[in-house]
Image (cartoon, rainbow over all chains, first blue to last red; front, side, top):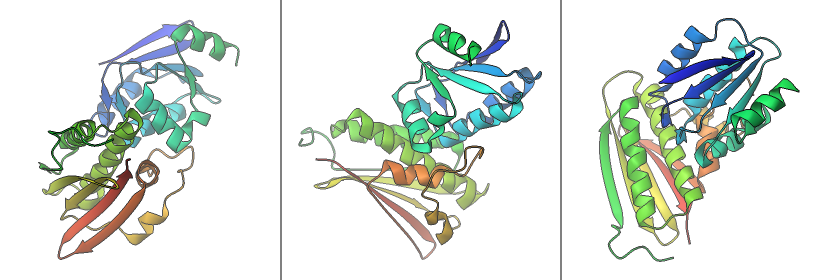
Length: 112
Length: 140
């Protein structure tokens, strides 16, 4: 279950699944396509529930960046060790900014 | 660190070649590695390597046709040895050149580089219709 919330222009996406893998990624991508429709510039992905992420799930994060307005910025909140490891291996931790909580992410993205 | 007294030295599981079944493989490698006192970092790498390898087998090897994937795990003195066996299309040799991270904007194509990053040794052979991906994660 993925939840969407607009916080004064920043879209917060709360990913409810524990495992965002190749089996779950298509439904997640569909939810994004149905709910991210007006090309927001700032999105926060709350992944605090996600215990496992594979490259297919990560690929949906990249596709989200393409759905957003240019220049789009994605902040990732609550990344557990497995998520951080994948971002580090793929070097996408240079693209997606990591934060401990939504208030930190909101403040940083607004000032970016 | 020696393995726990009751930890099995080997384990094998076979699943249908479906993305929904990959979790059974990663659950198996996690349980096996935990039984052999692998650290948290190693558990993450092993689970990720097996998931990426199995995804590739399902998507590219079998490409929608029915099949099976067998995962064989063994604790040996040098570390945990992992074999993934399948009878789908073999991995083209050129794929093993993709060991560096994919371009930032790519939505796919990162699997093999991730596997390389997560293990210490990788070997691949295909003979008599069976493909074997052999991985080693060193462990003291």
